[in-house]
Image (cartoon, rainbow, N blue to C red; front, side):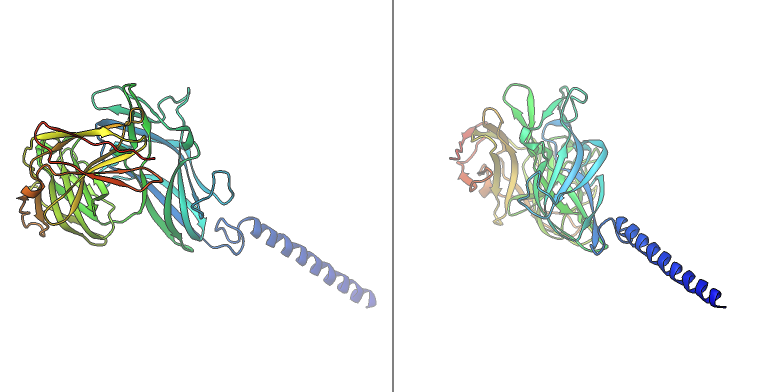
Length: 401
């Protein structure tokens, strides 16, 4: 009997030892797996960031191609390329995208990434380099011309930087869109036939809301632009498709000014256009297409400090300011030049479709333009031009210290 009790006591101690060892191994395994499969350390809550890519009008190009390698995000707006704390969404293989296919609400999905909860304030879009293996990883094809390499400055090898404000909440998805403005981002380099990439990129929530409508068949061309603006700043822009339909999406709920521009046509402006949550609002129908009158044109040109963005705006009788065109100056010469309509802009207050928009020529704004020049790190400059007449040229130069 004594031997039996001794044996049972020994067996019980052995069982407790084995149980302790197995428990320790199990805890170590769970810790290595992220504490339940959320991809992070034990006790660290995570959410998900999903990203897609979209684009604005083309401004004289048949194709603008970029090759995206990865997207990097950080919680510090001042974090350097080699600082710790970066999270990366790596595209394998890298994705080559023709930005001009991403108009009228079309999105190119980039992917999603789990992130620790918190506010992220910096994003970098990392593009592949043009090299011997892939000389046209990033390229443009001017309208009617051949495809040529789109050069990215050496300073962008660490990624195209933009400030963001994205909150990642536990067990939730933050859904955002990278809006790449190809029109403003592609810059000519003198008479060399070369083009540089100076990316203009904004990051916006993936709203379902927006505006759709139709333009006349005569406006179905690459240099026709439709945009919604606030205080003379373009929020979202596109070009009509082959049927004349345009879709401006995603656009946050709010009140906007819709602007239609086209070569040799008067500018059309619709004021107080409402955008409601989760709704793509119809501005008009196929029977009430926007048809701006033919207009004479004049030229505004000049020079500015390199890397300056020059915008031409008009202010209509309602007090609303609209951007008619805006691009960076030539990357070699610093020159710019815009052909602008000189006839009266046509202005209509918004009415609910199928009600008809009633446009009135704003005679007080005939040929009246204001130029705005902005350069990173400096206060924006403006100049009110004299009246631009048919066939006339007005010259204005901007210099930043």
